[in-house]
Length: 281
Image (cartoon, rainbow, N blue to C red; front, side):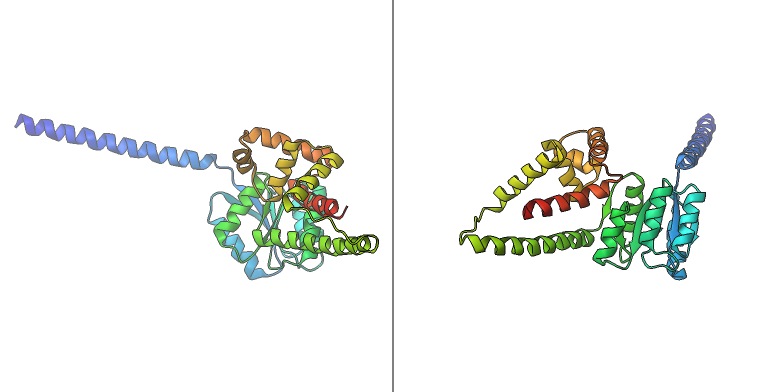
């Protein structure tokens, strides 16, 4: 009888302890959840279905807070100037003021980072968006999770460049190079029948040397620039070059200052232009 009473008491103690532990776990969960600072978003799109659809996608995720929605570029600019917004998702073609023009004004007048999210991949739009300081350019055919990941990356100070967009930029640069190269060689052929054909590795090495000389860059700085142009994040660059992430951040800040640029996206575009110019020369 005593054993039964003892076992009953032990069982009750175990159950009570279990309940206490569950309660502690719940408190810990809600406490950690309360520490999460959501990314404050603006969604700008003239299509109400897309606008509301994106809003629903982000609102069900605790990592984000949709603080405003805009139907054109003018409203987007006003919200960014008036409210504290971390990332603005902008469509390209909107009435009153398009996404590219809105990007320029938002970057100039606020601390908001801009991620262009659109169905358009025309060269002119891409180039202007990055020239004006956009942190990323993404097509709407990406999955919700990919779009969320892009927003988190942009908010962390990284550049987001979808592969199809990067290929588009490279293709444009290559077309410009081939056009200029043809003019250059046509001119050379008039004075000489011999054209010096060098291996691509030797040519690339010479281009790298010219870029470092012209822009007063160290070999490590050039490696950082090349990695940024390929779309790597600071963490990925650190792993690739076997240096700390903090060191990468210092290099990026130094490069922005040295090249008089405002955003790492502009570093990538500038590097592609460097290659194009050096090849022609």
